[in-house]
Length: 406
Image (cartoon, rainbow, N blue to C red; front, side, top):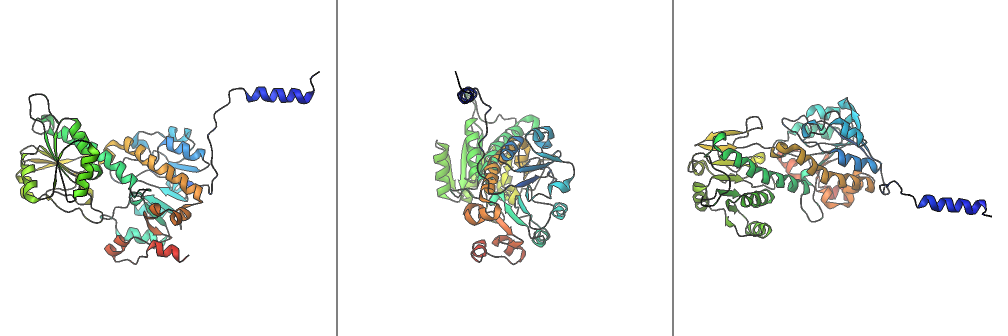
């Protein structure tokens, strides 16, 4: 006769052998985070900082995510998707800005700063060339810790968000140029690239960073001939190796660049200045020597542009003509493909947020992770960015020395 104990053990073994619901592994958390995702209000900013799939991962690790209603609308992510992922939908903006950590794409407006409380943490882009002095003052008065996601470095010293947005901008630059080369858009009536028996499109790319690399890949893939100019031999060599095939490369010399532009169908400005304004490389005289109906796509316009004739445009009115050359000078190219760009941002932000939780909060991660610390420009209201301090004559402290004092 089977004892009741044996029967229970047999039943337990039988249950254990049944198919079980998959459980997500939840690691030990140092701190439960409350993350607010507001709807972007900057002009033509269509991206959102976290997509629903990213929210689901963050919530599964025990954190709370509050998303303002319609925050993902311009990237085609509905409130329903965020709600199903475990987020709380806020119908009052004030609820989002009550969260300990506010995650944005664009820098905060004065109205948004007014909604923030004391000693909150802000993640957003830092646009030094357009960052108003009083914006910094308002953040400093509220003792905010502000981290610029475009200045955060990974383990290899690479800026992951800048690289992701650069990949998008490089590919988009070629798509945009192809659009405006067509007759229907006022161009020369050329197909970007080439076919058998027809000379290929000539493309000049100024810069040899991430944007230039992906623009080069896209242009070569369509059959164009590409010439790349940069100040750095190292960057030119790296681009050559990364692309995996021979392309024309040259250091920036005015006469060589002028000759290349005179026969070019497309010119792409892809220079990125480490600090301050992008240097103007292409003079108005060089632009006037370009072919009628040729296209300039100045991706560097967000930091002033590298063409003397460049002027900021927008997605509603993206182009203008000067000397018969079509100029496309929209600063926020990634917003043109807002869904793709939002997913790319989430891919960087999600592991970062989980790491903050594991470390017990932003302050601990700032202390322990040098790459993350590189993105901090305000810590508890103290300015820690030298460029901002010198640009606006504001007192600043070296963040390494600041932490050494604790």
